[in-house]
Image 1 (cartoon, rainbow, N blue to C red):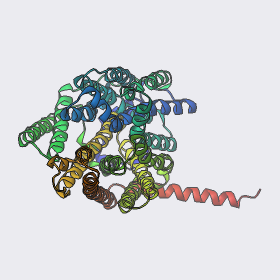
Image 2: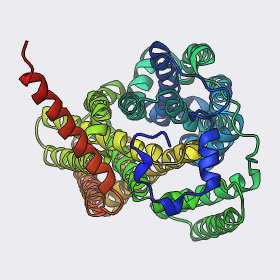
Image 3: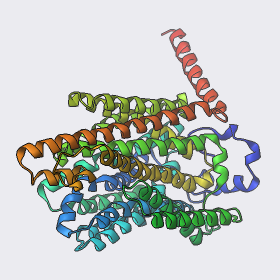
Image 4: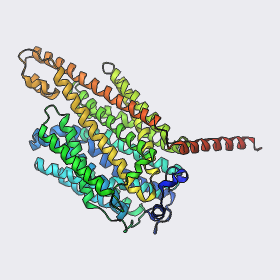
Length: 552
């Protein structure tokens, strides 16, 4: 297996002759037909091509945080329509990712990436020129189809292209950091474009980047036809999509201020039936959509959980902080987005540096250190709530640095320890953990903040009850009051909002600390990797001593 870590220590009882044969003929593996070595310059061009696609996908996850009020006003979207405008993209993508990764194993990851780029560019045009909310929701769902095709292919192409262990670590570091940077700069992109253009520009800006990435990937990315022996199970893709969408919808509905019991019940039943039928079908398939034996490897299991929990906390912190900066402190969308982008500044250099160090220190220490660092940064943001803004920015830099390290190490643990013929499948599992972490973070932490606001706000006399529904509603009511009444209402609303803000961040920090503890205590299966990292350090030290001892 060509991975970030040597497979020589892999449990021999988990390998079969069929696995060995499939590894040798997996797309991009050393024995794969039609796969040629890639030159150094071309390898880094491939990384640039896939990073551009991943950046687009990540930006579109958060770009509407600042654009939603404007487009909602112009399209006259209702509250329900606004919900689906935001959620259609991550929901559809999370449901399709597993099937897209396995389909890439069958048809070839380069082909999947190019098709995904074309779909993403076309969907961007549909969304940019939407004339009503329904058309925009459809455009967002169409964007998710293209994104789901691209995301597993980006990581799989890195694995195919970078054979050298150290180079692959650096490439995965860049890849993991791009995902976080894209999510962090999304609000900045939205705010900056709205300063000069109409709301559709937040989608139209995707098109020229798609064209550049499409040409570059077509020219430099390694080909490979995949394995025609592996059938793509469309029914299983539908089953897992029903399960994932039902689960996310149930979480969002349960954590809303006024949940519908019927909607929650229907979503839970749909999710249970979808997952049950999916698992039952997979166990009887020769070529399953997901091989559950992957999770028997503790390195993959810890990597998946670390990625999901890191994104849960990161997405929640970004959402609630962006709202606080705008609604309580009076920042413009662009100012709020620029402040939150401090996380990206912390993530980029650390993620790349960690990628270069993984082969020396191993993935588990980096996962633990990254999660702990992010937790400490979250605590700093909590303590800095009433301090000068510089302290909040410092906390965000620390959160970004920790998340960049944890995400890079988690990606390497998942993809680097999966068999070569499961490369696309492993990449999809990693992406699903990323998307579900972000979705649940926004749903749970965002809704929790709103619930705390509603329960702790103390409205002045004669103020309409609608002001207790949220900070936006309180601001709207305050505009119709006299100056003294407006100031009193806004002060009460700000205190309640800060209550929710602090509770949310404390929970996010707790999740990060718990994830770090799990990774630290879950040592089984990591001994071989950490012993190898120690051997690498000892060998480098010995070489350095010999060099110093050599005359001249």
